[in-house]
Image (cartoon, rainbow, N blue to C red):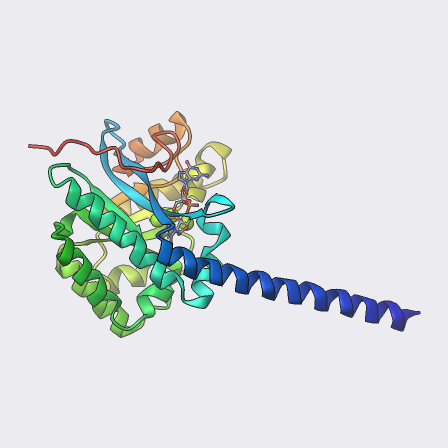
Length: 273
Ligand code: C2E
Ligand code: MG
Ligand code: MG
Ligand code: MG
């Protein structure tokens, strides 16, 4: 009996594996089709100065306008896009849209940040492609920021770091995303020409959950960021109490539902001065 139920379990396992593989292939095919159709769009979430809540920039966050399933968030397709390498095409599509938005609004102030994964950065020629796109659109490079997660930074090869340095030399900002969740915090600040750090939302949530040490950590990191002359951006701010605490700690910029959700078009601030 044990044997029979064992076999049944295997058959079930097989069937599940099979359907997962099919789903995966279907999804990859749909991504390919959607890349050609222009179904990958960017939504833009405001980044504000915590002191006075003025908009200082936006983060571009990819969305898939799926022909049947509606608007999909990165969690629903990025893992497979990264595994299959299709994220490279998605990243290009997002950068195209961001550069188009910037070029159409040369008199607006503020930056747009784009997220770049380790898979994209690891491709030969990523930096050359990025720079060529920025130049083709005639976009001021200082209006762009590249966000790389702290975890991705761990896997960067010397070639990739050289590419990031070239992008930085052009005047593009470089922010370490989800800061505080990886293990490379200090060495990466030495090896990479970073211009800013984004404090991971888990630290911000901890501020009102009373997580022991959360306030000390966020405050201490703000000091480090200021000492290094970097821009500090706190992510995932949902309450006034969090915004106030982070502002008092010295976090310069903030982002979160409190200030505005990701939306289809950036709310451009007027250029200062
Ligand atoms: P991330 O870069 O850390 O982006 C922040 C995420 O937090 C976004 O999720 C955003 O919508 C969400 N968020 C913003 N404010 C709040 C808040 O107040 N509370 C909470 N709970 N969440 C908030 P989203 O858009 O689903 O993106 C998830 C991740 O997908 C991003 O994390 C980023 O790592 C990745 N991603 C997004 N767009 C791209 C892209 O164009 N290329 C690549 N390679 N990765 C991307
Ligand atoms: Mg980001
Ligand atoms: Mg983040
Ligand atoms: Mg994240």
